[in-house]
Image 1 (tube, rainbow, N blue to C red):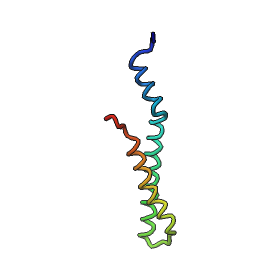
Image 2: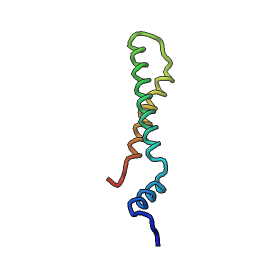
Image 3: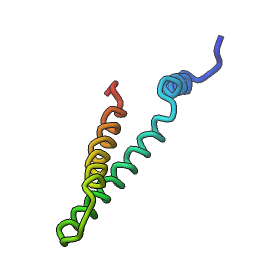
Length: 79
């Protein structure tokens, strides 16, 4: 009936259930790294005595929590 290789069929079915999963994981990793780097820079500025806006610190903290959490939920649940 179908002449598609069973392995290819399995891979295509998996991709259709979670499209662009690899791309989303790459984005969550990049955004997490950016958030932690931004937080590190902000903390070093605070430690050096420069003024800072509290809302920027809150944004960095939320990003440092949000993006790794999204990456955690993106993991394979089958494993």
